[in-house]
Image (cartoon, rainbow, N blue to C red; front, side):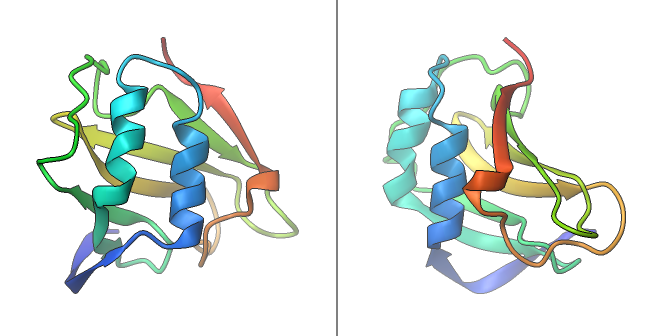
Length: 129
C-alpha cells in the first residue's frame, strides 16, 4: 500500500471532517492548534489500495501545534466496530512538524474498507499520554 498524489488538491469531505473532529475532540497539548488547521487543510494524496486513507496538507500560515506529540501520531485514535464481514480497524491522525499530515484507516484483515465509517461505530480512545 502506498499513497498516490492527486492532481488537484481538494477540500476535506464531510466524512473526513467528522473523523478529524472526533479525533481532535479530547483535549491534549496541541489539540486546539490542530483543530484550527481544519479550515486550511486539503487532501493531496490517497491510498492506492482503495481504502479512504488520505494525505493532508495544511497551509503553513495555519496555527502550528508546537506541542511535543511523542511521535507522529496524535494521542487519540478511533477504534472502528466492524459491520458484517468488514475488517476491524483503527483511525489514525498523523502529525508532521506540528501540522496534520495524514488521516489513515488501518484495517487488519480482508478487503480494504471503501469509505470512512459512521461515527456511531467509532470509539475514541487514548493511545498514549
